[in-house]
Amino acid sequence: MTTVLSVNEVSVRFGGLVALDGVDFKVKASEIVGLIGPNGAGKTTLFSTLVGIVRPAQGSIFLEEDRIDGSAPHVIARHGMTKTFQNTALFPHMSLIENVMTAAVVHASVKEARLEALACLDKVGLSPFANHSPQSLTFPQKALAEVARALATKPKILLLDEVMAALTHVEMDLVMDSLRKIRDQEGIAFLIVEHHMRAIMGLSERVLVLNFGRLIADGPPDEVSRDPQVLTAYLGHGHA
Amino acid sequence: MKQALIVTVLVALGSLVAGFVFDANSYPIRVLCIVLLTASMGQAWNLVGGFNQISLGHSAFFGIGAYVTTVAQVKFGLNPWLGLPLAMIASVLFALILSVPTMRLKGPYFALATLAAAEACKIAASVMGITGGPQGLSVPFVGDSWAMMQFRYPGTYVPIFVGLFAISSIVFAWLVSSRVGYFLRAVRDNELAAEVAGVATFKTKLFSSIVSAALMAVCGVLFAQFTYFIDPETVFSIPNVSIRAALVVIIGGVGTLVGPLFGALLIIPLEELLNASLSDSVGGLPPLLFGALLIVVVLLKPAGLTSIRVPRMGGRKS
Image (tube, rainbow over all chains, first blue to last red):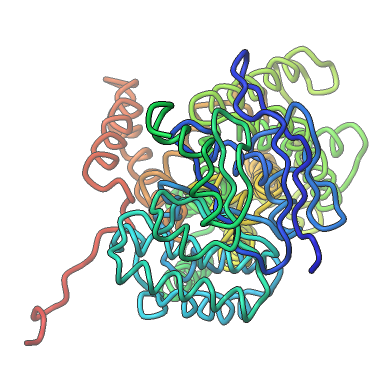
């Protein structure tokens, strides 16, 4: 399987604070990778760095063959990598379908974009709400709408930042099924930040663990969940 | 959008009819010309201000447009129709130069930077010899001539102002319904999210800015041909050009097709009425009243007059 994302020794500093320290990993096409870590571990910073919002101080990032670190977010999105926002960032004065169309019109005509946007909304079960305002949606629906908008960019890899927060177990299962289906049908890889261990362990084929900006584990979910370094990061020395 | 287009077409046709029916030298026809010019200026401003970039520097594009054609006509004998594209090019070039440092600014920082640029243009025009300095330039009248864009009476200008209004409205309607319209609305709502969704936010803002500058330059050209005299204090005026363009849009409805028209239809006749009745007693009152009107509209109808819905006759059917 081809490698879609290569992150090579990436470091990010905010003044004197080292937010990411030599982070190094790869994601293969169609792979679902979970990214976990305690609060402040650097997960959101890593996502922001991957999509070009934050520039790395060191290291390189490749999307397939193309080096993308230092590129603007819209360039990276057009290359095939985008993210959703933890606190959702839909366009409040545009309907749901217009939100999704905005990403689709980047590569399609307005007419084609409407059809593409409807298809993307359908994939996450939101097509009945196409003409609704984002403000009328529940938080889980907003998170899924962001997934639909991200899908409209035609990504090779999609970074999901806590899209399953606030979901019930039943809703979570539905979303997990949808993501697996999208992966199977379209070959999109996912890198998922999630605090719900049930979602991470149930969905991910591989789990990365960040702590204080450093990658401390990378492996299958059951192996990572027994890793003493991971247990120490989450529970402290006395409990590991 | 369909209703707005119908209103726009009706006003354009009504203006054309009024231009033919009424006395070409009458005061109401002159006011109609100024309404159409102001609505067009508002529409040009709307392309930038309608998408969250409150510009106070649009008088720069207006003034550049007015000066380029007038200088070309007075000093080099160039026909104003040929000067028109030159004016647009000059204005677009200035917009490009201005946009590079200012487009990354937001809110009051952007407003102040654009205001400073317009003031700088006014000072430059006041000290340059070719512009006639603070005394300004008079456009020589050569008699009624479509070829020279000059007419004795305001009524003959009506088709030209209707044309300007139609073009600015078509450009706005086309831009908003095209992919650029989606990008502009996305940038207005959340620039970072738009960027991450693949929208080239800087290019989008730059594009709307140069289209806006080109339209504003055309307004400046027609103003110079209409008044036969320009000076830096008039055509680079922040209150009379930049703020007036913003005012009619904010009162009419920001980011809407008919907002500038509604705003101009209210503000210009009201201003003329107030000036006629109060200029002898309290001359400074009209700007104060418009300031108060702006506050009332922003507080009560932040989406402008276009958001007012007229209740249907007979109420809702059960």
